[in-house]
Image (cartoon, rainbow, N blue to C red; front, side, top):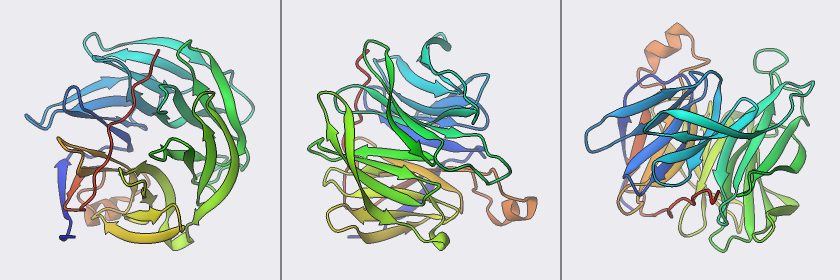
Length: 299
C-alpha cells in the first residue's frame, strides 16, 4: 500500500462536523455540524457548500430519495428537502429526565433509519451512564427502541453480509458487534470487538469498507484506527493533523477516498492556534481499500 495522502478539502472551521455520507446520485458529500445546528452538502467539482440551518443541534443525516435526506435533530426525525431547505418532521420521542437528544445515525441495508440518543452532560465532559438508546425509524414512520441502557451510542455500521451490526459506545470506549436480523431490524447478542485505551481518545463515528473491516474515528486521539472484526486486532492507523477527529466515510467516484470530519469545539484559543485545521474535513487517498454505497431510507 502506498503512503496515504491527507488533504483538507473543506477548510471551514466547523464546530462539530459529523456523520459524513457520500451521495452517489449527486456526487456530493453530505454531513452535519452538530453544535452549529447545520446540515451541509459539499460539491467537490466547484467547492460550494450548501448549508441549511435548523433550530437545534443536528445529530445525524442520512440519504433518502434524490433531492432529500433524513435528519435527526433534538428529539425529532424529519425529511429535509434540499431545494426548499424545509424539514417535514415525521417522528420523535418524548423528553425524559435525562434530557436526551439524537446523535449518530445511518440507514441499514433494508432501508430503515437507525439512530442513537445521548443524554445531556451533567457537567462539562461528564455523562450519566446507561441513558443512551438506539431507535429504528421504519418506512411507515414508526419509531421503536431497539437497544437500551447504553452510554453514548455513536458510530454504526453493518457487515457486507448484513448479518452483523457494529456500534460504538463512546462513554465505554468500546466497539461492539451484534447479531442483526435484516428482515425485522432486531439487534441481539452483543460482544466486545475492541476496547480503546484512554490515550486513544473516545471512539466516535465509524464506517465499514467493502472487505468488511472497520474504520473508527478517535475523538481526542487525532486518528482513525483500522480494525479487523474477525480477530479484534488493529490493522493500522491514519494520523490526522487535528485532535478532535469525529467520523469517516468512503466516497468519491469509486469509493476509494476516505472522508474524515473533525471538530473545533473543546479546544482552547491556544490549542486552536496549534491546530489551524481543526474543524476541517479531510480526504484521505492511497489506502488501497474501497467502500460501498450508502443505503437510502425507504420511506
